[in-house]
Length: 255
Image (cartoon, rainbow, N blue to C red):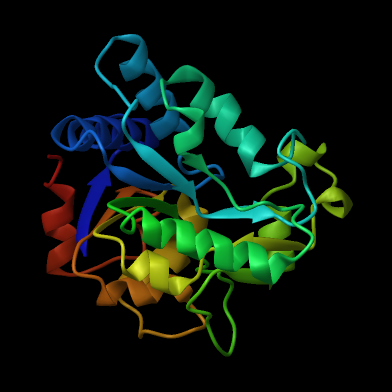
């Protein structure tokens, strides 16, 4: 893992957005895997600003979001599709037909997951995958447990994960769906490049487990240690549990 530690979340997000824009300029047909939640918000704002300045052209890019709440239609304000529309899609020139999402209202969840995996494979896999990491170490909606699932699947969300998503549901935990559809570990580990975002001291334990801990299903993010090309973008709070030479190197790595 290549660690980058910044003084502030905004500094990290602005730099990360510029790096993503650079990757798209280099490969206009880039296949992007995208996440939602608190961590990527400022990155998406940065990408929207670059697009407004004429410095980002996503017209030939393709996107696959990594998860969606079960039972929510795209137009529901709490859906991840609505989140992406608000924070990125309506601000950039992505073609609608190049935007891909798991359908949380599909009548057959297993068939929908198989369809999605086939679409990712048809696109040639993910070139650049943007991920957050949950306080409990989940990536996408692959929650800690006895086992992890390779392919896209239906998953039951932990109480901790549901509480972290209350804001679009009027801060009412009872309104947050109990389950979701998510890509599995295979699509993430097979992505050509992974960028992980984590900000705030509440992410420190998960980041420490991801970087220093054993590879364990109790911290799904720890499996990223097996990936050949991972960048971890942190602020000082999220990095507060890290130690050793790699942390010192990361503090000076701002490129």
